[in-house]
Figure 1 (cartoon, rainbow, N blue to C red):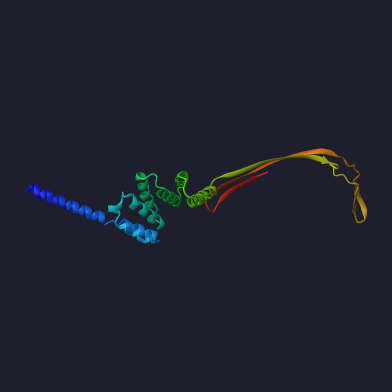
Figure 2: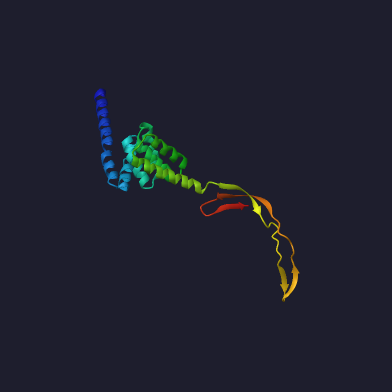
Length: 212
């Protein structure tokens, strides 16, 4: 009798497990996402998250739908699970990089984007990755201090270094004084140095200094 009960209990457990797994229709999740219905795909994935988590295919579409609908942390965690099991998945790595970018984690985003490029993806993917990398550089540059410096040197010859003139200065028609000096020529040289310093404080304020 005990053996029969054990077999019956085991059968119930097997049926329950099969029903739970069958409840997750990854094909439906994929189709919904690919039809541009990210919000519906995300809702479906959340409803079946307990059963589907750990399945790389489920986590891939769950992660992408989460990122597309603004649930960035959820999407990143799901895609990280995919890469733990399938580190060569180019799609998962590309979407993970996009998630990091949207979170503002530029260092991690750049690392993932560069790893995608190392996989020699298609020209279209390379172009998309490059746009993200350019955006990262632009974003980092806005809050990165910058400075410039220069040194300028010149030399020449002036045939009237003293700026002499024989003109008289008059007041009411009468000479006030007369400058009687002779022109003098000479060589000349000059040196000029300067620089600037720019440090963004936040999107509204920047500290700037200039010296010459």
